[in-house]
Image (cartoon, rainbow, N blue to C red; front, top):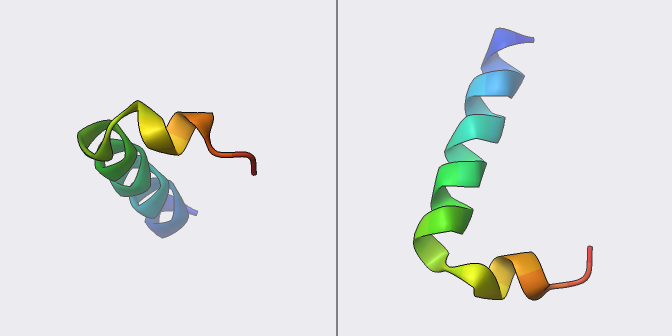
Length: 27
C-alpha cells in the first residue's frame, strides 16, 4: 500500500508541474 501511495503522490506532483491542463482533462 505504501508503494501505491508513494506513486500516487508522485503522480499528483507531476500533474501540478504539468499545469491545470491535466485537471481540465476528463477522466
